[in-house]
Length: 132
Length: 392
Image (tube, rainbow over all chains, first blue to last red; front, top):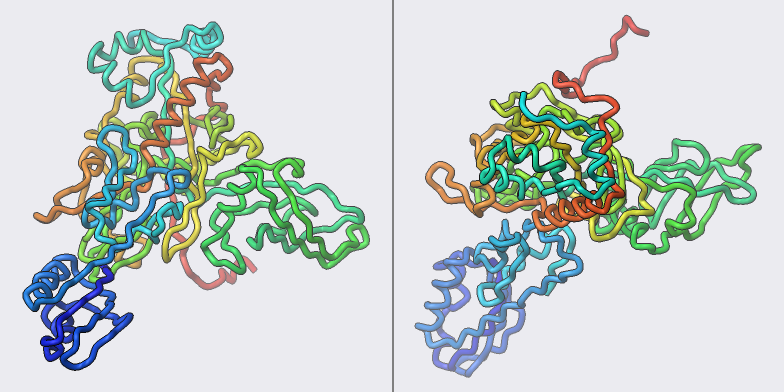
């Protein structure tokens, strides 16, 4: 899964190799989108994090321990009901079960609280009904 | 052989407004409650339906002649190439053809669906010019109403069973069965199972050449057996095949079709396909027919095929029932794997209900097949070989 995260950290931890740890310890692919860092100053870092969902979870714990305020920005998907044909193919890649087929009438349900913003469903949808 | 009914008797009841019609899902409970014998007497027609991606689909159309006329040999509709090897202003556009400029984000399926929804389509055509057809180029705009004839003619629809797809490799693969995650991360499957037309008439007793059907909201017909018709496949004691078997070539007037029952499909990394809505009524001629239509998902099996093997002969991870596939996950080698369909059950049900209403209204009667399909057909692969010199 992929997730966007805004890190805000206090000055004293600019010595900690955050990016290195995220890659090395949690096998995450990071892409720095914006950085405002100066030695021993309060700073922020906007990252794209990509990796296994469980590793992202562990990384969240690590960031908290280090005293970093991590704000995960999950772009929540939208399903266009006019385009959706309720085939259910999007559910095949939804690891968090945010997209499911109703056991009553097989219509597509989207639970935005469960969505982790991985966005895998967007390109999988054959009718292009899903967007952010 | 118990109670029997003829097409004539059933059609008379339909016209008189007395026919009893249920869907292939509803019939299961009726049979459980009343038994085969009673259900056969009571029910006249069972409607079946499916709504899934069916690549082998397309539309025949005739543009009418310009003045002076052109013999179109290169034809583009919204930049999607249509076939230029027919007579002057006839063409066939395949659903999976891709746009010259936009690639597979727009294709033949989109052109077909845009025509159905009444949109204007750009037509560009080129020719070498002949004495009788002097014009060499034309660029204009058309809607379905400008066309003399426009009808879907789909060489292969409504597969009788279809293999489920899995990926055992260590990388994600993108297929017409969707995105298959690495290391057996998911399973996708198609067909509407117990509601699917050919799974309810496994030996093609009532679905044959000439059968009148629901095609994308219009009245259509089974025109021929579908391509890759492989009826000699292995079957269970109910005649249900374990893999891709019967297919149907379907035909119907595009001008009467409704956008609700047809949609373009784009498969990431693969290309364009089209969701086709098909509904087929099955007359309950006798108890055997009733037994056939009362089939349940738990009794229909398909193979789980490894799509990561790039050969046409892909290995199977074994059989699985549609009941299990539809539960959302199956266990394979001790691992729980997520399952997801490519066929919309919600749309399939809507079609089965709509067809039921058509028949109830008295305007849609049943057509006995003009010719039945063979149970012995088999298919071959394409051999790559040198020319046979003796034949030259």
